Image 1 (cartoon, protein in one colour):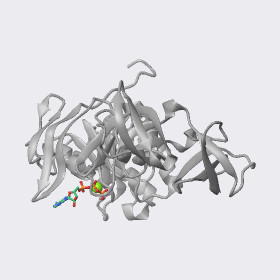
Image 2 (tube, protein in one colour):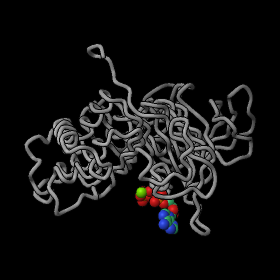
Image 3 (cartoon, helix red, strand yellow):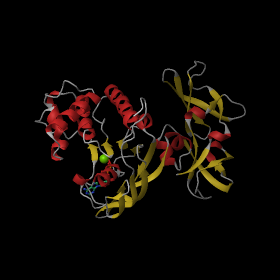
Image 4 (cartoon, helix red, strand yellow):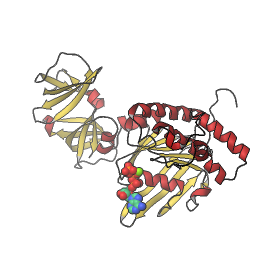
Length: 359
Ligand SMILES: Nc1ncnc2c1ncn2[C@@H]1O[C@H](COP(=O)(O)OP(=O)(O)OP(=O)(O)O)[C@@H](O)[C@H]1O
Ligand SMILES: [Mg+2]
């Protein structure tokens, strides 16, 4: 390999109409999704939306009720987990508590009956990779949460998996530690480009790590795309609300043409034209989406509002603005101390920053 070249490891993973039901509960509705070889995809979604179910189907811990799953070109739909070369990091580490670090990490290699010298070599290398060299002989209970998390990661990586699955791996860590392990994960991914599905509740974490993000709700992928796609062009109010901050004002769409909607926004007391999410039909429940950083304060001509609340966030200030209708929206801007509570302002936005989305 030439110096600096990125090693590409892993195979693609494909869900073709894959679904999972438990009795009446559709934990995963029929899903088509391809994760390219070397891609890092993050699943974001509320509790119960089907994230773990999707990972379990990929790993082979559960069989789909319908559809097929492929790793590379191979149909693995009915292949038992132990015959899939997949590394899984569970939310709760799932380490063997009475074993040392080395024995925990070596476990998957022993199961695969590798030679003892090969096991020792690989375990040493992977412990170096996760910065745990020197900790091999410790019991895992003598480690901090972050160290245990890295043992769990080492254990998944040591088998050189075709696909790496991580289910909220940093959930138990405090914010600072989370940040440093996040950067570590990103470094590892940049070096090794292993096909990865990563589950988190933390949108910031998703943005730091991922090539693409999939937002799930009620067993379905609502939208999948780059973080920028999801932020700028959410397909509905749910996705908009899940990625970043958003103002969503109820809107009635009266006409749609050429990707633009004409909508009545009663809380603004006016009608306007804005880009529309694909598939939305006139008459369907909808909202006007404007991100807080796109709300311009003190712009003429605009909509009249009153500053209801001011929240200093350091460099930025968040303003809660009450419209004459009583509805409120948030603006964010560089901190300046020219406004106080009760100040009357006019607000506006550039047309390209407004979007009509289904609710
Ligand atoms: N073994 C099971 N038997 C019955 N229902 C299940 C089972 N496992 C999951 N479910 C249901 O399937 C749905 C999806 O669960 P899943 O564990 O995939 O959610 P999740 O997105 O991982 O949630 P969380 O963020 O809380 O981990 C939920 O409604 C859950 O109650
Ligand atoms: Mg889960």
